[in-house]
Image (cartoon, rainbow, N blue to C red; front, side, top):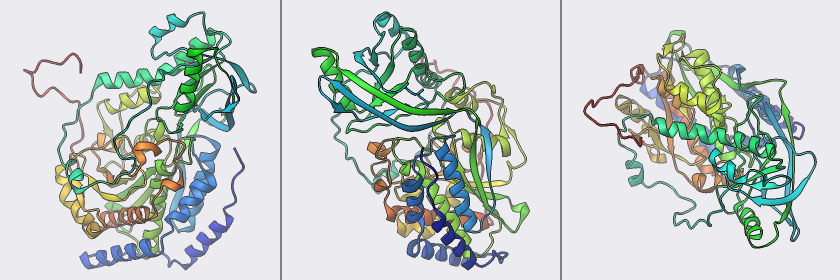
Length: 545
């Protein structure tokens, strides 16, 4: 990867801004009108003098993708800490946690050589071993999705580049690529869902994540040169997700992902004539010198050490196909902008406000879990488990043992559903929290963000907090084109981030934090979870669930 871009001009500007900021003064006793005035100032600063898109360009255009434990992620950490330091935040530091191998992709290429020359749209699978220079060979179409498929291809793969995906048919989506929620659609989220762990789904997820390594071990034993899989979206999009980052458990042969259109072309040629010949090149470097990834933490100190703290977070890591702009550069720069907006008030809150940029989210919420284990609570999980196996085990391990800061965390707000504007917040099944969340959202109703819905949402860093009974919340966001084509893909760039939406989201995040930090009311907590038990002893278990 390239050397660190020069952001000294931006840092000088940030430092100049910190000089203009008055030193943070102790807060007066904040009654309703004083709090309203602070929120009004946050709205004014965030809508009329926003820095969020400038910050976003520095991160996404200037630094780019941030794979966990890569050189680029560490470069981004240093940048973020410098920016937060320029805004006058305190206690800025990195908190390390055990992760695994660093992996740095310096370049890659893929091309069809015969029956005609053609550049192919491709990306290496994350944590793929490099090729030894360019690898050129005929392809063989050998779809394999489970170990039972190996016997069919034994003795047939030597000297070949193996296409392992079923090609299927081109999609025929009738859904719009870009959308915003209607009020009626948001209303559909307002339902209470009984939490339920599906062991079969968890087992399938574990099997799917671990299969790729077993497949590459089979291919290496058979003398195959490389693996090629097909992208899961069409439109020339590629993704490159990979999860084999544990030392000693990496992929056995180089692995590349091809765009659907290119992959199907190779399959058609192979099925109707001589196997096409392709050339692959992956320039990648493993780094085993430091197996520790890092979360970035910063604070605006409160005036009352006994009042606890509130928190905002977003995951800082991304995949490498795009610039990690919407997943989750958007949440990260909103957290940074919220810190700037609150620091700009020049008034200290009652409770400390802590900001977190998590790492390792894409590999199983590993950074936020590490924070929980260091500060908040522990669960009895075999430390030898890694990746998705560890994720599933941790969510379902009892008892939960609270730590010193468990009672101190009063609220956590997370952003990780792209860059769409906030429409409200998920109450995560905590029906008692709805009234307070509604009060804190009230100043932003005219911005379209007044809804509190009972439904849970998952897949991001508030999940582990909820699983131990702490008040962690994710905002409802307009989907835009996040799920349809941007999420994890090669077009996850700043072009798909909406500036008006980002200003609105940053202001609301700052406003919610400020109110939570100063309110006399605290969000009610769910009970400390204990081992679930069947609630209907007369129901016959479904063997398919």
